[in-house]
Length: 170
Image (tube, rainbow, N blue to C red; front, side):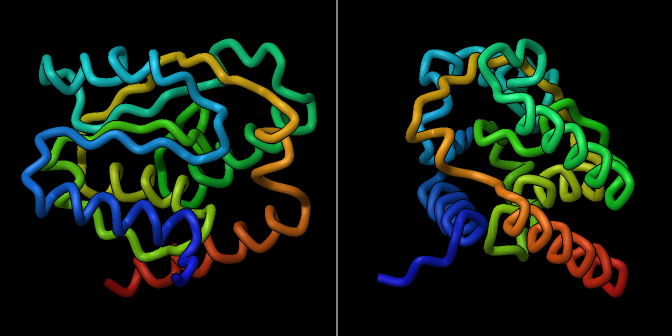
């Protein structure tokens, strides 16, 4: 089995869901940080036509999130905005929902953790209606051991810059 990273997994899963005729697609990162009970609230804006993409934001109530992660997340939000023009309070959220129309329009090219910012980029590029919904984050020793560190963060930044350059030539 080949591990293609978070972006590869999301791209594969979204493609499979579209082939199977899904009307709405929800993606969860596998770090155990999100509460499945939040999915219902993510679906509502799509069901009512208020949004085509919904991002679960941990930053509306970041209680329990380590200070370094809050700072890193805010920095990632600024970088995502500067590169792709979409402001969000939680660009690195691992809980998202897409209408099938929105998912079909997205061209996810990245394979790593930069996919979270790429989803914002694709939402903006395709002029999709989107909304953020506050979600509860669950922090355990396991979930805190996952995600970004300085080395991964710098690599993700470089990949985002390359992604921006590639999209500019499309």
